[in-house]
Length: 600
Image (cartoon, rainbow, N blue to C red):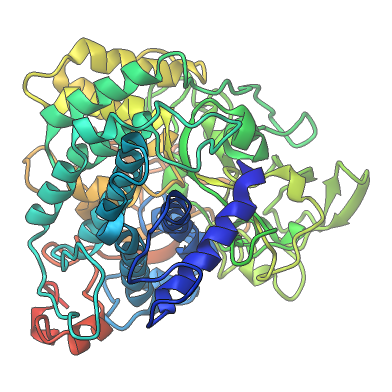
């Protein structure tokens, strides 16, 4: 797909120019007649897709690669552009992240509507299939953006056309109405006009095909509790995906230390995946050859030895989530040795995360203050361990302002070895929005939660995801057992991809009312002590695979040696949502500051 990025860029440039015209030009697109041809319609559709690449926060594609840092599975620098405030119930309507995401959603919607508004004018000028295909893509894109708007802000203005200077004030529409509308927009008859997939020789994962459309519809139905519809759509998507998409094989070799080798998730989460993975169904496209078409995620996520920021990584609670290879939690498994904690664990621990003592991007990774140098296996020399020494080591992975001892391995391709130059570095690794593993888990959860669901089917889908990494089938076949297994799989398989934030808000405890988030992100977030790379802290792991610590209980009966990294807080009735953006409230007379979200 990368070879088509120039067309994306050209389409966006023409489209943006057309948006700003206030009179009909003699040549080129105009808002008065746009789109007037197949080429203009396609340019507009591609520009709408380009909006996906414009959502960047803290250098990362947002919300796909950053939202998980605001949950129990992520840890970040203790002072990082106010992002820790998002986990401490202290953000306000004027926070930049709150404002930016809202603005980008509606800017993206504006690009979509500029094509949709006049698309009917092309009837008879282009083939019917082309018309319906464009319409389906645009409505799916609109559904994607409105879904995120409702998840983050709740009730939002539902706008289905381009605005003018005289037509700008809209009240907040109840989110139930918004979700109902976007689901109806993705009508089966309409999305059936899409190709099953876009071939690798055309648009690849850049554009929404029929499998992606049904998967997106299933995701949205699942998120908002329409389980029967989610099960139907996910089943349809999987039927269409058969023979087209498949789980990408992963090498599950365990490397006890950096000396033995380096785990390699790149076939699924690196450049190799962009063309070689059959698992990616829909992805955000990046390429440094096009203006404003990169992010800087590699800088945010990599260690200081690689000249990265070490800004974010998995939490200790996330590391303690990974089961032992017998399928049991570390608090129960006889295979677990807290002094050798990485042995006999779910292979995804090392495939998706970086822990001290391993290797990342060709270089030994250590948070041990005694390791003043680390070994560079690519150059064959020892180099300064700037993760623990130097004037910026306090920002290292386990420094006093670091993210708590661990980093993500997902999306950190060794191809970037030796080339990271700071905040301006252009990372062009694409970011998957939908992949087959998620679709399988959507299908499983829908069948678990739907009263008429097929529990045997749900178990089979979960086991298929686990089998890829040689984990045993789940034990138990009851709804409760499968719900627990499903929540483990979503937490582990989809980590660092942006799903956790809303999962723990929509999932409920056994009372059916209390969101899992209340327990997951309330209280101290622990990390290994500065002088240690592991901890004797014994976690408490519940049926939802929420990991907590009591600050006392240990594996060896000695003093609890983990440190408090940050204090987190979740207030019921408030932190289910972000505040409504201040600029929107004060400029929109139909909203006003009196209509902010509860608690703000």
